[in-house]
Image (cartoon, rainbow, N blue to C red; front, top):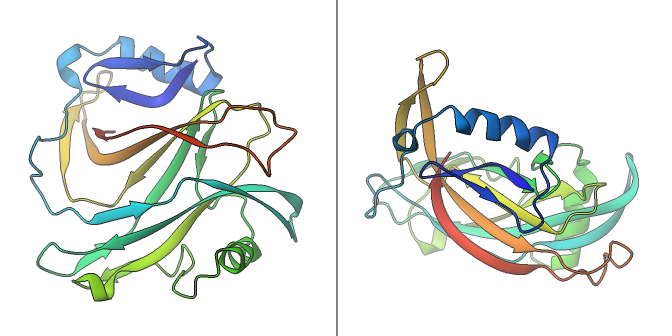
Length: 217
């Protein structure tokens, strides 16, 4: 079980069950072609602006929409700008599963799903993923709240990681191992979770935090 894209400091992070998904296997092949020094690490002290990011653990919700009735997973969050100047906030949320799924937030999600999430959370400050994009003003009074949403994968998933980019301006450039062209890697926040239990009980599905760290990807 290789988590696609979970490459850090030249290591490939392997899940506890040892299965390899198809997409993840391609990432493993690429990793084996690179020397250990090719993978940069985030600076110990931030080298660029960095937004404050607070979040809740992902939750499940059943929604009937134009796309049909199904389960979705969502994660609410708040972002605050204390960097000293306005910042353009364009977040990207990607979920990777232990089955090799790579799922960008919002893909396959009808607009009505956000309305269901907002109603459930009873949070009038919650704005849609499209509305959160834009200039983020400074200070706590200008903090904004939104949500990332994914259709629940069809596979039986036991572990997920959520990668978030757009929270900082820190990047590093490495040479692509095959082409030699420059590849820009962005500092990203990685959130790991365990999903123990059975797929027959999504409503009561535990989502247990396992780790949180900054990586370059």
